[in-house]
Length: 218
Image 1 (cartoon, rainbow, N blue to C red):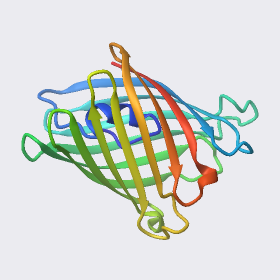
Image 2: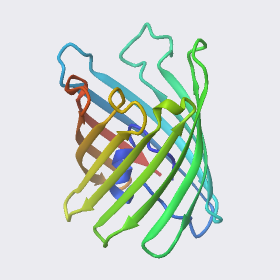
Image 3: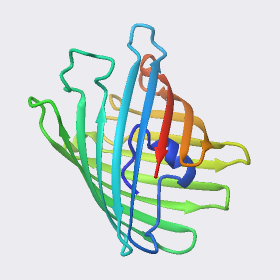
């Protein structure tokens, strides 16, 4: 399972953010779009597109490549809001209900004035029952004053999936991104998933937003 991205909430609603090692090697991919509408009317609507591919080996090792861009609504940006992510990691199962996931993400901005950065992460998942799953991740960015934690949960109903994601800053938390995201997702057609969520910034309510995503996976 690759590190969470803007669209990953839609996939996390299906798997609580963790995928155990596959029984055999496989290649998977996805394309998706996210529309974020800030609750502060002075802020602009944001649209993000992403496309990614991931290779998972039967041993549990995986590698992924992800391209994201926020430039579609800004014709003058010259792709300065786009980036490429390289993801390397290892996922394994502890038992039938629990597993772990650790890896490294290397981000390369398309803006030549910005520096590439890396981030280490470690996480685990536990399936409480067939419907409820929980997860926890620890992130260590290159700038170690921005360490943060993510706690996720999803509950699969007959018609839709409910999910929640809590992000907590470990250092400089009073100025960091402490946020709670609550949402609902649904598979509208095979391999096609949509979500709607409200992301509340617990440090600055003016930075909260509504988010809608569409993801096609194969």
